[in-house]
Image 1 (cartoon, rainbow over the protein chains, first blue to last red):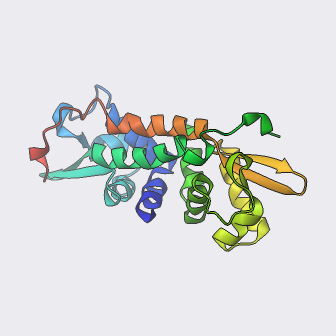
Image 2: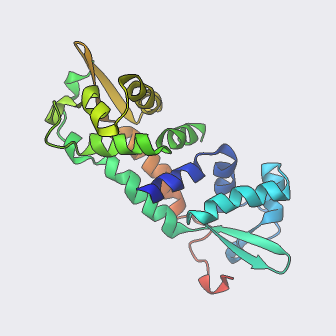
Amino acid sequence: MSDTVAMLKALADPVRWKALTFLREPGPSTCSQGDQGVCACDLEHVLGVSQPTVSHHMKQLVDVGLVRALRRSRWVFYEIDQEGFSALEAEIGRFSTAPTTAARDDTALA
Amino acid sequence: MSDTVAMLKALADPVRWKALTFLREPGPSTCSQGDQGVCACDLEHVLGVSQPTVSHHMKQLVDVGLVRALRRSRWVFYEIDQEGFSALEAEIGRFSTAPTTAARDDTALA
């Protein structure tokens, strides 16, 4: 449970959510594409923040297993950790099919 | 996107996560069961917090559409909003099957 809350805390930030959306579908102008991950330099431009701020935000996501960081020479490249998101998706999914509310009568709504 | 971040912020709290887990599977000692939702009075005991604190936390979840509140006489009952969780599950699920990383070669990991 605490792992899930840690993941949620890492995700619950507009800058980090924007970074993830970009990691998922990088634009054509990025300096790296395909199986290379996304360069930290591209995230600086997309997010409009400094390199240390990029590092700070991405570290939150790496630490909880939602992003992988890959160092190549002087740059760090980032990619989404699909396994981490799958685990979180399963946790959230437990509440979209909650057993105690499956047969609830919505006519009782106030 | 901002709706999703708002949902994540509401979820990213240990007390609220514990409340949701209890709403999903209330114990046998609660004062209401089945299709009645969970009484705020039970949440006070489970979470070990005051009634105003219960109200504060649950309002965060109600406001983003993850919980429904139902007033009956002097008590408020809460139930999980499965539709809200389904929507969030779908947003999270986009990252567990990210198109740009689907064919990634993990041997490139540093």
